[in-house]
Length: 117
Length: 159
Image (cartoon, rainbow over the protein chains, first blue to last red):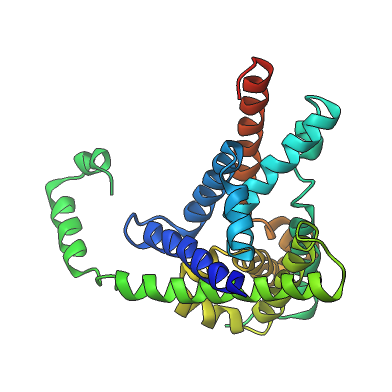
């Protein structure tokens, strides 16, 4: 049950970093999210992101930084199996669910909903 | 504005920049940060709850439960975006709603809904990744570099 508390704290902390980047360093949301993804990829490459996911569960896997980590993870695990080409074929392996879901449901949303305001 | 750009401005323009900066509303950084913490924390807690549900009732392992969790969060945020609720939450939560994967889904859904009047191919198809594109581009490129560097270090006998 304490996993929920850790998820709340770690997830909140990552969002605080994002908010500080937006408010204090005056970055646009797109810059903030891109930076967090790159940071996640680097942490994933250093092997530091996976322990965080183990510790905080969804608190680390729901923020966008886990997208970078998952890209690296997919690329590396596939490269281990099939050699250097695996970097290209495996890069979307772990994240394909998120991207496919965003495309499919985003498109369905555009069929169902009309723009507001 | 960067210093490099400032040098090119005429004195009048510089004066205007200072004038505008003085009158720019101060951002309530502290309350924004607290809101971001609460909103982001709640979204991640919901994610943790979904993950727990998938693991307990649907026989997913800790690794595989991530996929349905993300998918459900994306469906929820697309629906909330479509009904116009997500905008209100995002107004309050700031980065707390932008940084989790729901923010990613929100940018995809809102861009595709907004541009649907321009047609389904050029409008929806072409603009869907207008806002989410940078995340994928930089994510994939940096992941590629990181993976290549790591493989190279391994091949050279390190780590």
